[in-house]
Length: 623
Image 1: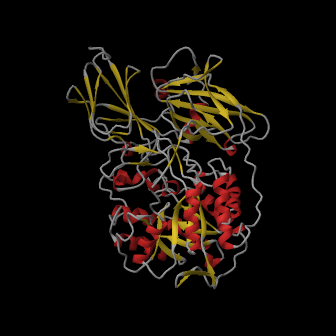
Image 2: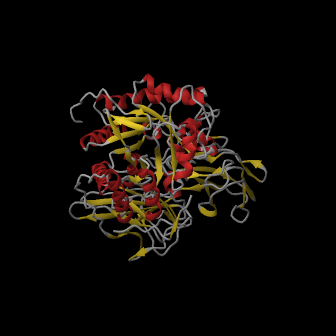
Image 3: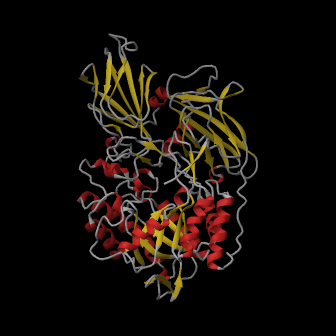
């Protein structure tokens, strides 16, 4: 970080204006999530924001990455946060910081760590002692990282958001007071503000008035009018100007027309409002961190796709969304009457590496027998968050497999499971239930050999926890109720937590006893893990892995989880950043839940490396 300079005059409110260092200041901000982008791309994305005419970057901080287990804090993400702050400083950009603890952001559980849910009485986003104790411990770690980066201490941070869109969830102003007091306890004295959408604004009252902001897409006059009703004599800050939208699996890919958005932007800038473009650059929901949506009663569950492109001014892969970017840039320049500083951008070349033959495979049954697979034995079944990993922590993501042995049975009844269920009898996949909303009954009579030992496996995928709305407090995964066979409780379970963390993936891919040659002519009857190699000559470039022809699963490259794919679409490619590739041999794993391999190359199942994303059919989104 550049040498610190003390600033006695931070961002202030003076009448209907912001003032920074004694001068009128308009916040022109863009959201960039450091955790959705590989660090080698940060500087490029920041320069592109500055090149569009922005002066600030909006930053969410996900609790579940920074404290992956209770009291165990990630040194990697703490370091990355500091690095990102240093880059903003070196690029003369300000930061609008949103530390949560809840961030929404289409991120699993809105950024809250799912280990909170191992407390059966947990009430998230409340003054429940189990939650506030956890928040205090987290903030004791996180907020001292941010404190020296405040503008008053020579850093880039000019404002802190207290919680996030709380009015759409609750009404307890005392909870919001608690969060703000934590900020103060750690010396965060830059401007504090709260943000809400039109649904939530004005739904709670804090002990003292905190600067209120508003979120919307195109109904600027209506939304700002509602803001001014409760805060008439202060500057207007649109904390989230939604310049695109996210997409669920099974929907058409959402885009928002550039001309329509530019009219709204013109209206805001003409009136002197401050604006944050949400998103300026979206990035990727790598791993199992995608969020989901549901009705308040849990119905209509819809999980988000892996790409968080968001139809933002800069695409998932770092390319300019040229029309939108240029229209926004031109509009900003018109009202600021200042030519943006010319920036040098990365070319972000994408490369087509061709077909990747997956010459080796191991079935789910073989995988579970491997010595590196942790398991625990329980008499009764339990939810994912109660399953223990090898280090004693609770499982949070991925898949959980429940296994038992029976000698007879006809009707298998699963009372409550989330989210997707795959039932195997004697290593044969007999039932797939996608997006389960209620109890299911599986007729297993034709698969059970009476009098013999029959192996039953129930694989449940956690497809992403809801990140917004009332149902966010009801996000335990796996089997939540019991399992019965012919109306009697099924007992004696061996439970395998398939979280596929980087250490496990490395052990699996390097275990020579696990793998056998793939047979391109034979369809597997159960979930299967495939392995292949990508040989790269010279420095690697960004690419995309094409998933058409596969059913549903995840892809890993060199141990890194690229995220989920699903033949339901609309996304049919996964972004592969060059930072995760290397010159020479790269190991690629594909875990497919049906073991389908309908895309073949020279007799082997394969995936294809391509140089352009495939997002399927598109549809303009309105809100």
